[in-house]
Each structure stands twice: as structure tokens, then as C-alpha cells.
Length: 69
Image (cartoon, rainbow, N blue to C red):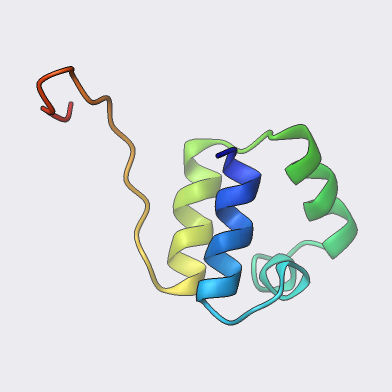
């Protein structure tokens, strides 16, 4: 699943539209949709998106034995 697909799922589960998420983070829906098409999100962007909808964003590597780094 791409990060844009994950953001769409986040919006559905948070009961907001992608356009509403864009407005909440201070951008236009058009600019946000363009960013989603480019898949050009930084870790900071993703952390801010998560904070905006009241959840957390975790990033890590998972080794074959299941250990997360």
C-alpha cells in the first residue's frame, strides 16, 4: 500500500475527507492532492498529518525475526 493510499484510509477511519485534512494542515486540497500523486511526503509531514487527526505515526525497519529498529 502506498503512503497516499494509507492517508486515504486514515481519512476514512478518522471520518474526514482528504480535502478536510488538507485544510486542517494549512494547504489547499489541490496542492495536497498533487503532493499525494507525487508521493512526496517527508517523515515530518507524516508525523504532522497523524497529529492533526489525533493518532501517531511510527516508522521503523523490521528484521526477518520481527525485531523493529
